[in-house]
Length: 151
Image 1 (cartoon, rainbow, N blue to C red):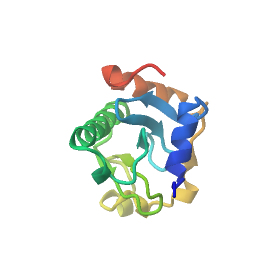
Image 2 (cartoon, rainbow, N blue to C red):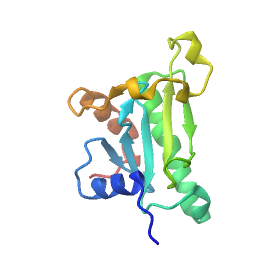
Image 3 (cartoon, rainbow, N blue to C red):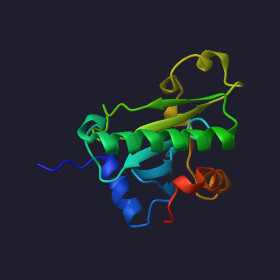
């Protein structure tokens, strides 16, 4: 049985050039903006091809995915001037590999500053908007530099 998850659907849309959250094509997959910008610059790395878990990748592909995740984090940190980047690979709700790259800021409300990013109300977060977030997305793409391949 072939499983289809939101990750599979997004990767299919990215391959077709129809996902407006696209930032860059990296060696291991796709850098995209989060559909909810709970914190400005929240991104994901989606593998291509989609696999169920990090452990499903061979060592070289696993290493590349993690290197691309860190490169995306470096780019997000440079662009947003975040205090730090939180990284998360969970796969519990969408059982396909994907990495969350979440900037954290010195001016976050105190009740959120030292907790995990899922403490925020993600449903109330600003939805990604291609026009509103164009400059941020383009700056992250540019900061990825040589890591990003042309679309």
